[in-house]
Image (cartoon, rainbow, N blue to C red):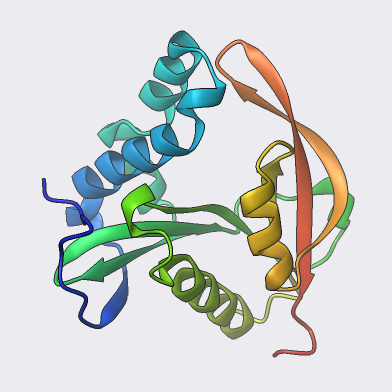
Length: 185
């Protein structure tokens, strides 16, 4: 499977909704981007366990077939750069009864950062959330990921709670961040 590299000539970035045929691509892209983001901060055993559980083709196919999930894949020259996953399945207790959607994942390959891929995926995710008439878009981010936290803040996300996140055998602390969409709809 080919992924983006810095020698790939830049043409127009395209984002499309993933389909069942993208199962293998999403599994590989998910494993690679998650590993690039977190491997230096977590043990090999914890990473291996998490990747196996969350990025198997079977798990990704189940997620794709769930009508509450929507995956977006970003491409340049038909080469994948990153992806995002929106999910209306999980309810966030801290948001009470707000009509909310979770931006469950947004990852870009390390060598494709700085190409506005994350920005394009975020804008598309917010646009879709507005189209679905969601009042809030929310996400969870590891407390020790200042680059991601800064990125989310640029889009108007603000921290509203703290939660736990299991990566392997260790419970990490994540910040919950939200963006109110009522004014955008």
